Length: 252
Image (cartoon, rainbow, N blue to C red; front, side, top):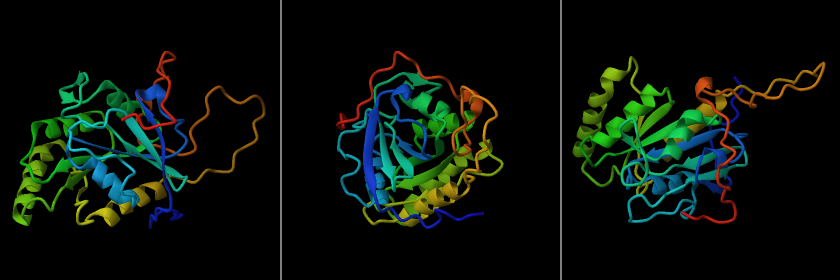
């Protein structure tokens, strides 16, 4: 295997755009890694830690501050995706997991999505909305890992007890439980481990083979330049009535 990304070193992180729905997202030409969690789970702080830029993702004491799907291009080769939180954000209920319809469509249909990082506040006992959301990811075959955040906010004993309780709640759904990581944006804990996960996932994407010269006109649809774990039957054509994408500013 050609190890192209294993030791991820972020040299550039650039805000790309904010999208109100799936059809407004940028072209799915780069691998994407999405971060989502209950509002106030520390998502923006974690994204800033991973990128090495304190102001990349906007943080706020107000839960549900992120309202749109925000894209950041990393090293010009892959993307971090900041998804709205599902605890306090206004939006439709989807299979008992409270997050808006745009997020549901992104997670189930986005062809460039490689992996979801599901954030869980380690300072709290298992929250039903977190359990519901992980169940929804599992039922819809969305690839994900668990990230237990804010490990500095409680004692190690409390943190480990909360993590163990959460893992026990979901254990019956899997033959092999999802990978789990601990992090603290305040202490810088977990950065290398999460970037390692991203690097390993990127490494698993086959390099583009030498394209064969077509004998006739190209087919109307061309496969993306890398294979993905998202089920093909979930992909749907974008709605032509979709709103225009926000590109020139961050409206969130």
